[in-house]
Image 1 (tube, rainbow, N blue to C red):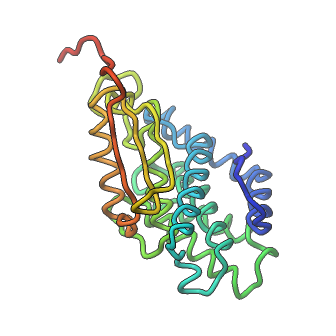
Image 2 (cartoon, rainbow, N blue to C red):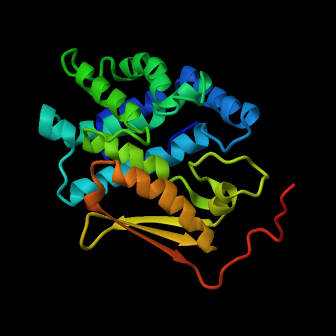
Length: 257
């Protein structure tokens, strides 16, 4: 699966993305993650489509933050280049959910087991031996910190955490829900019509969420707001959720057995 990322002249990112796109091992892990999530647990997907969506979102968020004066932690703390921060975010986004092949429970930390050798392979030869381990550590931190209850220590980790929550258009909410069942999770997921990520005026990033029904507030309040709160970079974001035109009826009738 091609990530279709806008590399924009970042040569190292381009090399890493080419390796990701050509990796049969990673493709197999993404596919197997969906077996666990969708086939065995009957919840929403956590495989290649999710990965492609949040990788593009994460890269866009990082670039908007950088344009707004927010310095990536890899630049500030390790004196790496802004382009290297992009590599960190992309790798972390691509590897953050591979632990689903082991189990949904604690998948964030299970992902670290499988992500570590992959990150090492993807960076080998592109970065010097004394630099690659630094990027690997930053990638693994971002994967660990996408847990809801962990506050990232890096801007890059915060970006991946928020991007993960923003894959919520048209029933793609990150709060797991059972497909086909009418619950507040599934109904609110279907209420999210469009997510728009823009350059902000008062803050670097503006996120506009268009809802077909006010039930979508559940997604914003129980997932996005929570992840923003524990992102470490919430002060740089403005989030607006609005119901578009007349509210759309999502379910016709609900009964309790």
